[in-house]
Length: 632
Image (cartoon, rainbow, N blue to C red; front, side, top):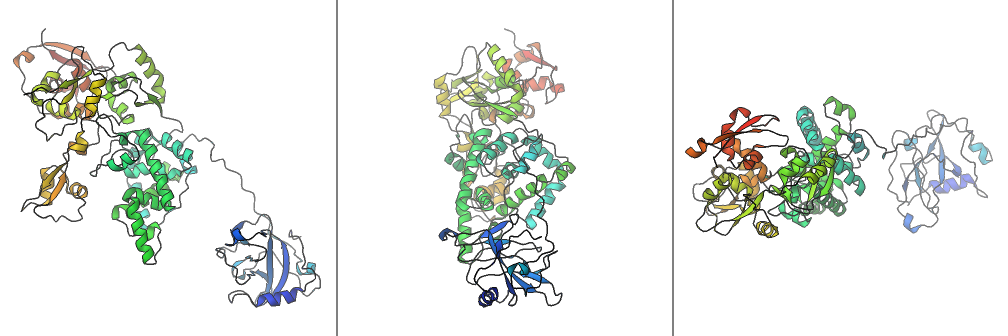
């Protein structure tokens, strides 16, 4: 039997009512048929729309619907057709695939939508409608059974693979266009590139996913650093954007990311992630659309808003696909969508050989009570310096100031704390040296076993700067009992960093070309154009162009650059006394680097590399290095 409860229109003639109502039907609805009555809506039919006047209507009655019986002239089978009261306005559209949708509306203004296009309701036959009682009009032999109840899925249940957790949090609407297909094809054609990104990202993914879930934000955003920086925390763009989330200096300052001589928090994993999510939340609230929020993250919210206004003035839509955007921004959101398409399919992920990421924290966050050498902190954690720097990339100098955030792998926290407690030597092996009148960097560097290049790098001095005035405080390796105190930290912190102060301006002379100027300052033509916001290569004499030294475009911490420079620097002249020095042997321990060994034995990095060419550029634990030391 029909599960619909029978109801009748009391004290009113059905046919008379129908004839009155039919006059108000729109032309596209059936104009012949019989009014069959009111009856409660089945509970398993989903309410999909509500009238626009809901706010002002008190008599909301969502469980009622009306049917119109309309005979099919060809088949002779009665069908249900929608009855829509003229004048009622709603945003609902007609359904697809012959599935009924119910429109709920105020009782005073009923609108009902059952089937589209008068499609036959399978399995339902309507009895002859000439009977006098309402029951005879609704004699039903069989009805469709209600759909099976779907099993509930707990999206918060832990999964061993972090990618499953990420998929459960996908919330953004999908974008479908040719750019998405093109970007997806590129990624799938370069699986090794995807695997490298994922391998780098495994250090940070769990933390970022947790932050997104805590804020209720779409987990698609965990893929955004793949678009921005390929998950390289040391990435540095020609426009001076830095870190996983590629903050430019001005935006970083707006979101309280410190950028000083000691550190650049745009590279800090925890601080930059928090700032980036704050910014993305603001952009979403500004536009109310995630695609436009992402476009604003790349191009700026002001620029996107101006593009929207232009479309409004032309009567055009203001969604992402309809706006006129720069080519970089036009590809930006499709790149993210392409990555989402790939990672949302477990089979495709397995086919591309993308490694699983454990759904557990990779690191713990500690706060240092006292300042310490980064090299020493890496040794406490029993990690190579480069691996330690990948978790703590914000530090510009080889020293971690006191009260700083320190990120340690979860499995090494106990080792770090135990080794720190057992260490009874100074935690800082650097000192402040004030340049005296008449002294040059070429004179000072050899005294501390450094090359001039490395002395400049460690102190944030531009490689193009040949002279330094007397009275400048330099950071140098400690000698004797010398050590940094609080006043030294303040004096050094007041110094500008080459990354932010070494930008120079070139005045264009007659006959010069943009490509020639780029070669002169060892920059690519694209980088020079982006730095000066040039759309073409045309320049005119007398104009000024901003140019940056090569070192100023690197986001790599200075102490890591200095440590890696030794093997590439040209040999220098050596004194006979040094050549006749006694030879010591050093067995490479875990965490040792060429830079740390050279500093420990007070020798030049260039000499250490020259004496041990057979050891190669990458040290192996247990390798014996020869070190020449002067007598006495």
